Amino acid sequence: MTSTMSKSEREQFLAGLHVGVFSVAEEGRGPLTVPVWYAYEPGGEVAIWIGAESRKAQLLQVAERFTLCVQDEQPPYRYVSVEGPVSSVAPVNLEEDVRPLAQRYLGPEAAEPYLASLGGPAGVANDILVRMRPQRWYSADFSS
Image 1: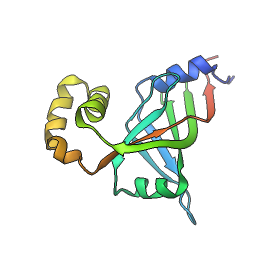
Image 2: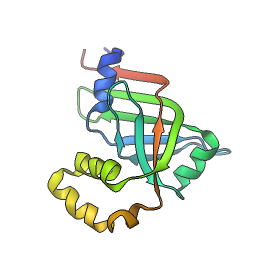
Image 3: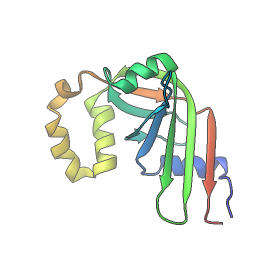
Image 4: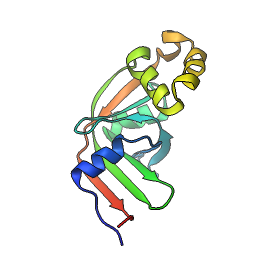
């Protein structure tokens, strides 16, 4: 049996620790779909950190929207997929944006060597933080 999650359930699930699967339209082909680290707080916007010159960034300039899907890979299976327009694009800040993401995904101890390997603020100088305002939600919870 499958059930759609409530608004609160899907927002809490999206706020949990998952590697996101990012998709953006690409004319004449299927969408570009790749894993990404992301940040989200219930009621807020989805934020992803990407290279300003990356294919993702180039496609976002044209599409102006993207989809993010997250899932539990172990039973009981659950997923949330959210799609919407890009609400802002700004230079990434090492301390405000990158450090919290690295700590979220790697943990505090492993994040420090990773952050050091980036080379400080200069190492992320060509990176951007893209925010998306969730507009369409899809979800399923197979635990019921």
